[in-house]
Length: 299
Ligand SMILES: [Zn+2]
Image (cartoon, rainbow, N blue to C red):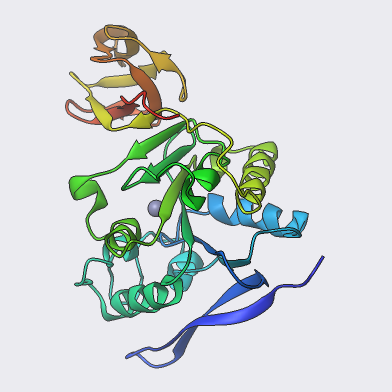
């Protein structure tokens, strides 16, 4: 296995003193250049476990150049925080121009400068609650494109075509505006995963980095709808993530804890796939209990 070379992507002077350095691990050479990054949100560690397996398996035979950035929010990772701890700010909302904190803004600028010119950028995230494996796109990658070939290999249960406020200021939105092919991945939280899950997703990513043609169809693709709690109660889901549901299907019940009696039923308003579920806990009226992916396009 060829060794990776280290390529710096950031050298940021902190106003508080000290310096922050970011390093990419580079394999291969030439075009196409694919950038895989993780940890814009410091507490989302699933991508790190996937990348660890990828590196362990080796990157022989990848197309062109592959740059892996395991740590994009170093202080967030260290402190297990979603935001950038010094100065604040959500790094994946800082690509729209104005960032909350100076370090957050400088990190976003350095990342953007590094990934510009890439053929494809893959950004690994994780949800906080049980979820299936979701690809996130701003634009549907055209047939025959590198992005489509790679996305089809990622093992997604669903592809969420994100728009509006959910996309605002994200790396994906910015890259789409600059015509850089990109997609993000949303995995289940690391604590809910088994070792075999990380191994499977690493194999998928490895195939995505080696695939020339989009031989596989894309999974179902479209928007998502929130399902809100109609009443307070103990959230007792009756479906699993990744399950297909029909309109009117009973998704969950809410149970009053004092008498252990059902207080309300939660019903699907449309057909779709259960993208993610709230944790099993006592919920309040209006709390979002699930998101259902409503699209069936793809292939
Ligand atoms: Zn995230």
